[in-house]
Image (spheres, helix red, strand yellow):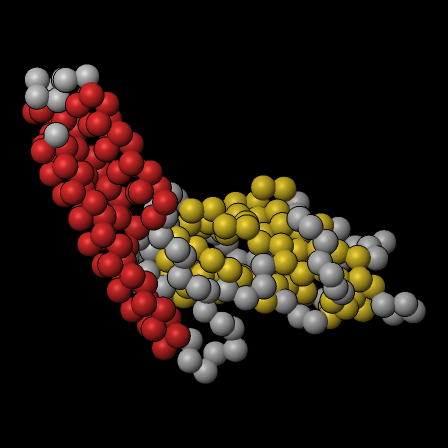
Length: 235
């Protein structure tokens, strides 16, 4: 039973230390994010919360396994195996925490005009920035409804269909990029929609919206101008 208490105590202590470290890192990340965006109209995305409940669940399962083995009088016979189990689990938790802290943190959003004429080179702008300490590769997909992509959009990108385009980025820490996505409005269109979705390359990549990610427009009466309308329809 003493071995169980030592292993459980050591694992719990590691989790507590990691949580304190993460809190410090998150606070520092929030300060740096606010500093980077000082004077910018768009607000920085909040730093994502750490999945501490998952770590607590892992610790609880390990302690439960040790208690069950103790109850069956098998702990002494298998104490080496139990020690290896706890050591392996602790290593996995540590690597996960380290990857979460050091992983990229991507902010993304789109800018578009308050109104669009039916004719002309209409476009929206996709914005993204890496607020994390390491490089990150990810994709942003622009979805359009009732309007089509224009050939004026700068390559490279993957055109999934006539109104959907996927852009892949690799951003260094602190790097930001913007992409103009051109579209044209058909003669019979009375309203159209646009929205942006994020696809990470790793489950450790953190992300949040930086400004708007969807907008909706409707044709004005007796005019060929489309103005933004609210509320936005669901994607």
